[in-house]
Image (cartoon, rainbow, N blue to C red; front, side):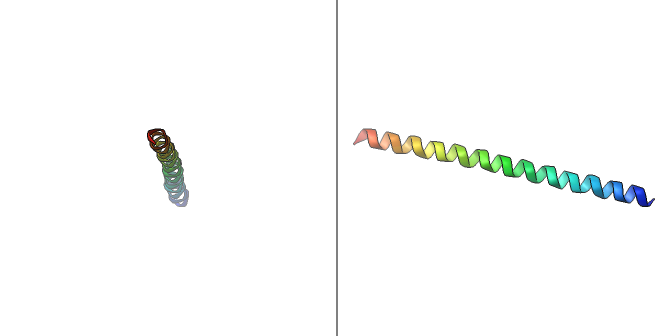
Length: 49
């Protein structure tokens, strides 16, 4: 019985861990894309002047 509880908690903790890793990587990718878009906008603005 105790082994089942520990196993269940370990699985639960792993789900939270991998969920956190997914959120962090998705956030980093989004920030990178926004930075690239900002640079592109700045380049276009400089070309117009």
